[in-house]
Image (cartoon, rainbow, N blue to C red; front, side, top):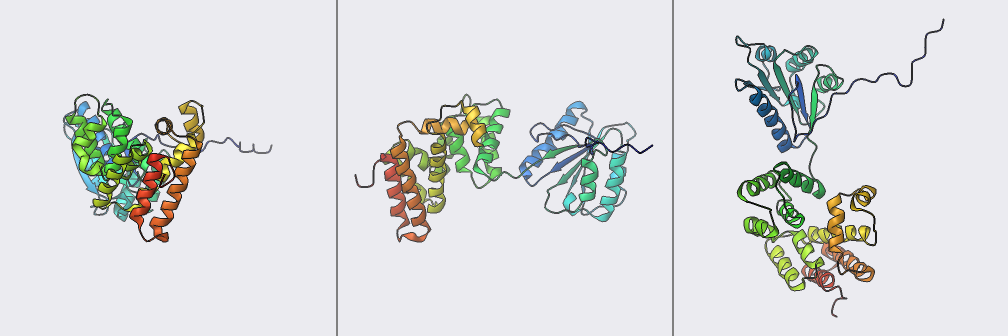
Length: 344
């Protein structure tokens, strides 16, 4: 009798659950992976808080995988005399020593009862791949908390919005955008700013609140200049532009901010689909569609096309096609804010 053929639906290797860094929980092995350090710190702290809430007698130990003394992992996870729960936080797994790698691979095959081992791997190298592959295949009953890089503007907005949502705090969309723009270069500072507003401000967080706290940074934001011009506030837009340039803003990303907002407006213009449905079809967020629709008030096909052309011209000029990038910016802002050809 011939051996049965393997089914195309044959069982694949089991995959461990993935858990959001905003809602971490313990497991015998917790892999905190990815390069975004602030998210990883939140995840690891959340695991500790979860375990400490269950038992204040939690024993916490820290281990460096790149400077590892043989036998340390088993020693720290072994039950103590009084049976307190143990948390072992292992950093630098992407640089781990051979001794750690060998012992960790053996450990996850049979984790100690009452112990939680957190493995931090930034993904900066393939070092430790054997350990990660074994863990992700289901060995040890672990979980993974991914901490992907937050680089794009939309990702930063989602991050900040999540900070306020987690704290059950409302923030106006325009205030959120201004806050993110003010701290576009530093996610750690953005997180700290969110937490300061959450802790200090009673009630909803408005544009005025963000300006009060971070006005010095907000006023140099390219997105603030763009928002003001698109809203048709010509004089205010020019003042904001000059403040931004006086504070050291670069003309190239300034034009890029205008271009991004106008492209979004053009994609949304004339479409009557519900925001959620349109956002899914265009690969956008619901709030981006809603914001673009608000921005489109007072615009038509002619004025939007003219604004896009003015922005394209400014983009070429600030990149070297003209001698005076400041004049190029002012002309672009004039066309967009007045919705008229330059000089009319």
